Image (cartoon, rainbow, N blue to C red):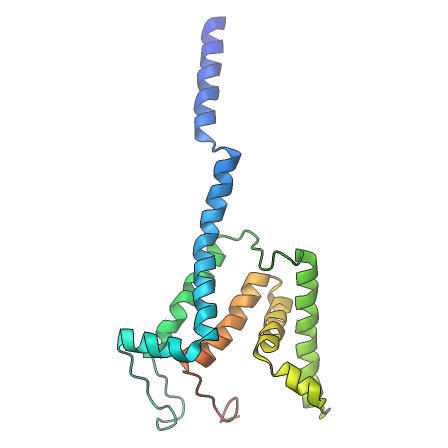
Length: 196
């Protein structure tokens, strides 16, 4: 009886050890989960940094013929370039399915990055409020804020301040720039919303 119970214990411990992955296997699974996320992020960043050649390449490969929206009725949407949203949709889906923390800048501690993003978001709100109140920006201040990387950080910070999650805030800021530079082909409207 005691030999049966000890053999059943050893067989159950063997079966439970075969069912639970080793700690090193767990690390590999987490790394694999972020490979798709990193690949999508890299593809989106490349599309944004080199948006003109990326747009031409994707348009020619997929046979996309962009509409001249200035010649279309107000509110017309050019649906074909929406294909540029697919990597962003994959990034968002992956982020939603794998809620583990993602390190963006390994040289910057998480606490510092979160603080910087909150301050950037707060500054973005102050900037918009100052404009609404008629407070003029300084010339160097204006030039600095118009740098694309600073604009991205301000939008990311604003979205992070609202969502409380760095990855969701980043995806929101990326969505803005993908719609502006890739989906719209960099063709900018004279004002934000014509009917307002």
